[in-house]
Length: 239
Image (cartoon, rainbow, N blue to C red; front, side):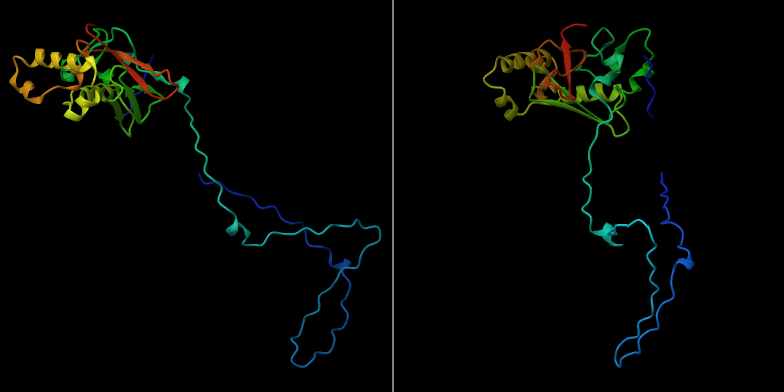
């Protein structure tokens, strides 16, 4: 599947109300009455003589010229042009042996398939492209991975945010949030094993990926089954 790289005034015509009536069908007006003192003078107005057999026309009320100023505003309706079933995930993020990505390590250590050029990680993660993407971790539902790029999320954006989120140190409050749970014991064991020979890592304490145990390799993303627009991340202890 090919992915592309991301790197009106309207005129209104007004219809006329018809041609001006023939002056011959209008009668002469009677002489105006003598003006009364202190009474404003009224100009005479010619009235048409009803024609024989002419159809009767009902009067029509015309809107006030400023009526549009008093009309209530039309509520804006939000619409979605992209249905969730039309969204296509980039092959590098789909489940399968597409990349070797250890979430503990920097992206510089990520390996792609031999037939995959490195430039593909800069392609859009989804088609059509989106500016926000939510990824949940089934084993760790309390931590949500939010990917944002106003110019369109790329594969690199997704992988970078996954590593960044899972490499955060766990606070004491977060540790208490997972109690009582066997996951806490597994996280501590994982932390001790990886930091035994590295004092810098030991000083940083338990990290979020320690709760995943040996599952440190990215396997892929799948759509969430709850009907939302989020994605689930899948991890494994080997590729």
